[in-house]
Every structure is written in C-alpha cells, then in structure tokens.
Figure (cartoon, rainbow, N blue to C red):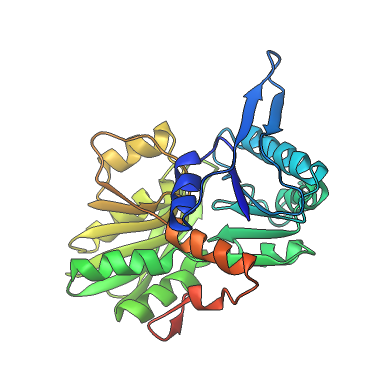
Length: 314
C-alpha cells in the first residue's frame, strides 16, 4: 500500500500516513511556466495498492486537474489499484438540472475520475448523497459526525437544539439531534443569488436554548450567518455552527466576524490558514480516513466507521 498527496492538503495526507505508521509516497508536483501541471512519482508502484489524497478546494480546477494527472502517472506505472481519496468533493452542488441549459458537473467530474484511472472513491460528507450513484465504481462515503460528536459531547451543553439552516440539511440535523439527545428545528430560507441568502422563519422551539447549527459546507457563510441572526432574534442563547467543510472566502470570513455565531466547529478536510478574530475549532478527520484506507486495503468492512452509539450518522 502507498499513499500519495497532491498539493491541496498535504498536512492531512501526512497525518493519515502517521495514523497508518507509514511514510507519505515520494512524488514531485510542479508547474511549467505556462501553468501546466507536471507530476513525477519517485518510487516504484508496480502492483501496489495506491491511494491519492486530494481535496478539490480552491483553486478547484487546478487541484482537480492535478489529481487526474497524478492518477494517470500512477496508472501508467502499473499500480494494481488506485483509490481517489477526496476528503472534500468539489462541484457536488451541481448535481442536477435545476434550470434550463446547465450542466450536471458532479456527474462530469465522476466520469473524469474514472477516465483518469480511479478504481474506487473514498470521500466525506458529500453535499448530496445521491452523487454516489454517479459512479459505476465503488464509493466509500464517510461522515465527519463521529469526530464532531465527540467534541460537542465534551462541552456538556444543556438545553440544546440542533438546527438545520436550510430544509436540505434536515436529515443531517436529525441524525445529530438523535445522537446528542437534543431537540430539532429548521430555518426556512430563500436564496437570492450565489452570494446572498434570506432566512425567513424558524420551525421549532429555540427560545432560551443553546443552538447547534449543522451543515455540510460553507463558503460565503450566507446561510449560516443569516440563520444565526434570525435565531438570535427568536431568543436563542449560545449559537454554535458545525460544518464539515469550511472553504471560507473573504466574504465568508467578514460575515462570520460580524455574526451571532459564538463558535464555528469544522474539520481539516480542506487546508485553511489561521483566521484572526474568529473562534474556529478545527477537528482532524485523519484517523477516520486513515482507518478507512487501512480497511479498504485489507478488504475489511468500512461500515462500522459510519456507526456510533448504536445509531447511524445518516
């Protein structure tokens, strides 16, 4: 077994290797003067079970192309099996035709991964679970929930309500509420455009309660911050936000600084520099991914990684 990393999240790849007691595979990933990506695998992979770790965080297209080129290099070097390890699967929001003449880019990326040489996919907290069906190869879909759950449980918060900041995340919020033995509420929203969201109403009782908002992804933080404002108006006490992938841009950082959110809990699926003036807790999913890689390699069951405290995470 060998694990290689692209440039999107090398610290996570190193942590995964450390969990499995092995060295990160040696490879050179650089660019030609015109921006083309060059990859050279610097060790023998003939007949090996190879895992390529790469999140499609910004610059998304660059990291995606880098992954395709790495897998092609490994395939041409006669690896026996290639697993694309994508802690964050980009383009997942474009999973259907919701208006005329638009692509289904999540399916296109799935096709490209297979064409580049992937034999299986390992990913975490997909924006839409049906994306697993876009692949004709095995997909192991993990959840960050067990890691989040351990951290939240230690806080011993009383009178907690789990809130989904939009209707689409209700299933995830319900799973958290079951495990944390907390109430459940939903914020109904209306999206004005890609950057702006308007929170309209809260369904459920949150007055005088501590609120945990859960979502899979935040970028501009519009959904989270507008929901937090509404929850505060409706009488919520402390507001925590729990997000698997925090790909924060400048707009999102500024919004969070001004928001009613007391703490943002996220994971290291995407590499993010330290941000001043924000209470962000980053939990590592290296152990979860490392264990999954170990089990995939030994053809063992990965199912138990989805399960904790007798329940499923979804």
